[in-house]
Length: 235
Image 1: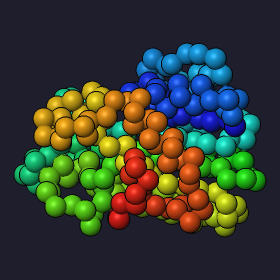
Image 2 (image 1 turned 120 degrees about the horizontal axis):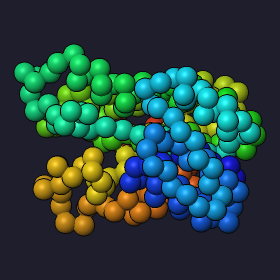
Image 3 (image 1 turned 30 degrees about the horizontal axis):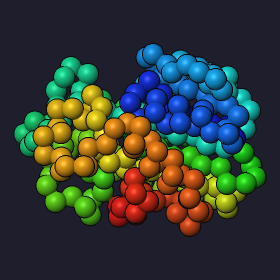
Image 4 (image 1 turned 135 degrees about the vertical axis):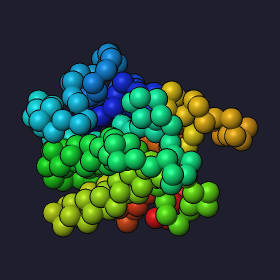
């Protein structure tokens, strides 16, 4: 199996890449990020910038050969200047909203644009993007985090569209978004205080759960948002 992990310098992405590389059924793992990349047997490293489509396209050209699995583990909750998610509509501003959409929705969509054609034409290839439960409209009970929620909802919709289009040429192919749980990474660090006991996952534990979900995916689940335990999260 040949895999590509975008965002492999982050906690979840690095853990996923390492666990994939340790599997006997995996021949090669392409690891892609702008920052420091994991290194090890079976890993091939590529640099890319999530906000630069040319760099995404160049990285995908370097990968070239058919892929069985693409995982997009990119994302941002806190802005580059350190500003946290909005607690009220009063905190909205165009620049912050654009940044969240660029990283959480547009970037992953452009990765899909350039990796979906690389998916193997036979068998059950998988495209999976890390999303979030807070991107569910029907599950929203608390409000707030406007730009982050909306950008993840947009990602869910785009992957749903990709699943429909992908299924026209390969009915066995699967495209999903995944909620990884609350993971102990720099992204979630400022917001961990209210996490129930036992529900704060290490990146390694989250990666293990997500790969178990991916391993069990069926074409009937394509286009859905699935949680770390395999349960479906309604849009």
